[in-house]
Amino acid sequence: MKKPILIIGGVSVDTVIQLDVLPQPVPQTIWPNESYRTLGSTGAGKALNLSALGRPVILHSLLGRDQEAGFAGSALGLPGIELLVETTDAPTEQHVNLMDPHGGRVSLFVQPPAEPASVDWAPVCSAMEHCELVVVNILGYARPALALARNAGKPVWTDLHDYDGHNSHHQPFIDAASVIFLSSDNLAGYRAFMEKMIDGGKELVVCTHGADGATLLDRNGDWLEQPAFPVEEVRDTNGAGDAFFSGFLAGYLEGQSLQTCLKLGAACGALCVTSRSLAAQNLSLQRLYDHLRAGGW
Image 1 (cartoon, rainbow, N blue to C red):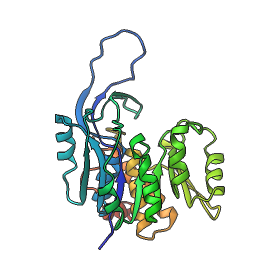
Image 2: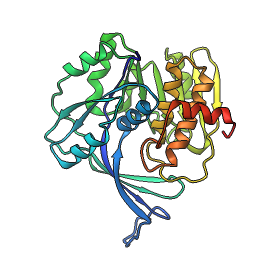
Image 3: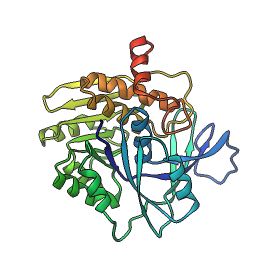
Image 4: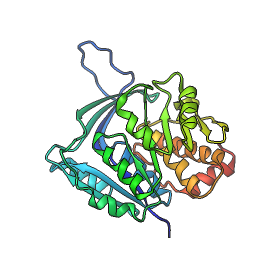
């Protein structure tokens, strides 16, 4: 029986608004192509993708006492996902994402992540006892989980997203993680950062570059590159990074080579952007392998 992956943090309810072009900062009236309400944020994205790929997931997150909490709980009520909820007096996190046809995004945090004065970590400590590893997302409330994972002897994976190389908020997560994912969106010197992380004892670092693919550096000094896989139509890029992370992790836990893990991540990310959901419909690990074997990617 596969051990679960414990994910800490990151569930929101998002309104996605699809536009021909992102708006300029001037007064105007905009008619969108479409808009819809959907589950969002990095913990939810990883949970949906990993569970679809056959890895059981325990997801801890903060939800309010509101309709959005019910929407999120229902969307995450799928086989393979165990949801640990800390109920807060603050509303559930909510975003409005303005999207263009090329995947460009402006995110408005209309209800920011809650940071309660205290969190009951007992359910998380119990879950850590039998989990495979811990994914700690970069939310403020999640910081205590870093020490809990260390005390439990569990490896920590983290996703720094669009880290700029300087933001002090990210440092505790960098210090605690054995595996780091990030985007090069705000980090022109990403290779130097990756080398610094490996020199500091990390197992591996993966940096994604959107349509330009991804790169990896491991503790042996091996540098790997993976192009992005083309798709016929981009419908929604929300969650693509979490899908990439999940495809990579699913392959890693199966003992695949790091290059194959990159391919699985790229395939999972490509399928994600063809869907309006954080995870592609009918996603499975076998489907990713079939795509790779067919040579279409």
